[in-house]
Length: 297
Image (cartoon, rainbow, N blue to C red; front, side, top):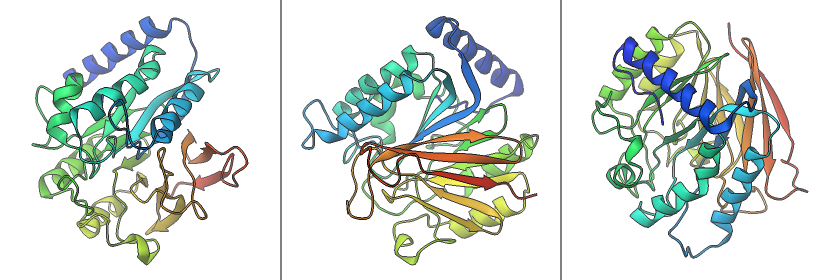
């Protein structure tokens, strides 16, 4: 689960505990400390969802990750975990599908999207609920990796409302968290797309407070990228030097002629990252497509 910032001592203790759990789960399995896996829009329904391909896609993705010769340092599942409106059976089924990742010792970090219900999520995945929330009524966290710090935001405004919202309290927390972790490049994750730096058709369902967020990010040179889902497509943009990375949905797409389902593997360095898309359709043009990004200085 995400590391919720309380005190430095608690943060280090949690990180240490996570390392012990990972080691005990996976024995001597090697970890690629520069590699992270990015999934989003899994949209898992209960045991008998109306679209059987949705859980199959996540199942295939999980099996692919487990079969890797080296484990990623983190697996991020960036919102819209549930099928429609965040029912208990959705999260129960979702938890069973991602269980092999945790059994293999992979740290899995989850965020909220507009098809999720935060309270139900906490009721089912009880270990995800922090004892002391860093931001009231928000599911946020910081994940430290070898080459970057990952900041997980909660853009869920309300269940089944397409628009996203961070809010003043979360933005204030983010500013403090970024300032406290300025030693490495910062990659910011949220489910919703920003309403800037991209195609206009993507704006209506995006993040309502995109402008204050970007003022906060642009003022901190160690912020290098904003990574989102929500659109069920794949795009790369840049706004004021910050990369905007739209990763494909794991579940389904609205227009198969334009998009397909898949996941993203990011290999990070101190100066940039390589983002490779993998798809459930082996012959699709996106499958294996790599985009190399250089961080702003």
